[in-house]
Length: 340
Image 1 (cartoon, helix red, strand yellow):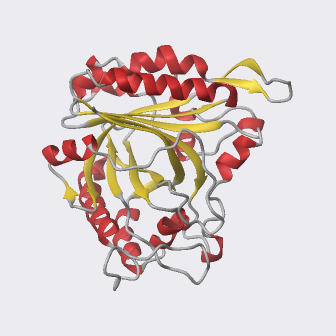
Image 2: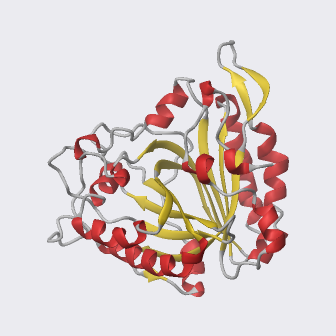
Image 3: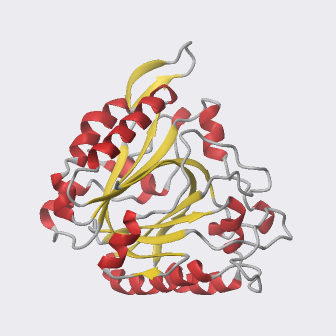
């Protein structure tokens, strides 16, 4: 299966994403020919799914997460529902910040498009990931649910049209939270075993001003680079992560900044709960994918951070190497399961 086009289908249900345009092919081909990754790994899926299948899928993932507790090397699992898109990552006019904050989920709830999820399964090493049979579980349990439904019938009826998906194996290059920046493998293992997030099994609407609804907001920025630049990008991206994790507005605030709003004249934001750089363990045709994964208190906090001159200055050296993207959707977490 060519998973480059994992989110393309008919015009009625097309989901325009970075991965569908530029994402790498299935990881199995690369695993057979490229060196085995060292250190922590994340099995990452993006998939779209019809509304009638969502509840069953969420329960399947929850059950599997508990099964993994007894699996050697398992660190954590999270399932995240795509709800919208960042405008500020694309340097759109400030008047448009947050305008797409719930665009994807609004369309799904109106039956105009499928629901979209990201699934991250974390292990301390590649061998333990393979031994867990996590890919086999996905193929046997989740993949059979990825079919288009006809929304014109009552109730919607399943069709034979398959909804494709993306699969990749990623390495954590660096991470950060309110306590510190994590760069060694020992530190990263500790970070991944204790992820900070707020989960809700169902979507909760975001306030109009982009402030918190008592749920954290995840962003996953999708970019690609020429693989030959991997080492320098990792270095510059770690510097960007450090700036992003430690910067807030107003900087004079004794805590970690003030909550932001989407008003055009408001630039306040609280620093993220956590940040992480995920590098695809494999290259495809001289290209390597990255995921910049961050958890924020609110949409407005994230959008305002991209306006901050300090962040923009730190992001420029990374952006110079990007050949595809950025595409940075918003997500709400449906399941967060750190190993018990």
